[in-house]
Amino acid sequence: MAEEIINRVALSKLMVVDLEDYYPEGERVVFDIKDWLYEGLVLREKEFRQSVKDYDWSKHQNQFIALTCSTNAIIPAWAYMLLSIELQAYAKKVCVGDLETLETSIYQDIINNLDVQPYLNKPLIIKGCAHKPVPANAYILLSAKLKSVAKSIMYGEACSSVPLFKKK
Image (cartoon, rainbow, N blue to C red; front, side, top):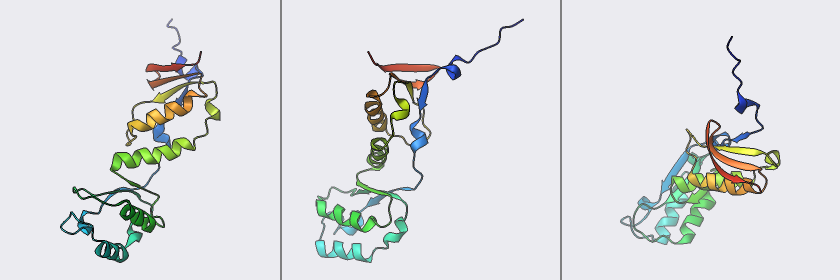
């Protein structure tokens, strides 16, 4: 008679932390201001302000926005600030950069507000495979936050994890 197979992973106190569980829904958009520049290179304040005034900002309702300029133009900080002020009433999040920078910024907020009490003195595994765009920086931020409370931290899957930290 064959022995019963026991799932030791399921019976362990190991807690899995999956960053995909925290992924906020909402469209991610790169907002490129190059078309609002003279010949794509020069920001003329009067014309730029007019473009900002004439633009329908409501189309960015509940979106996550990465502000950028894809040309080699030098964009003053106030220009991005002006755009973000207009977007505040509509967008969920606004930052300057690309989509990777945007995702990192989103996860930075999530991880900063993460309640770590459930992970106190527990062996943790930070799940590695993601189907959603979880940036590498999010894993770094999460491991740094959990190190202060976790008994141990591993990365990957329970069946093939990489040990990262063990409290002494």
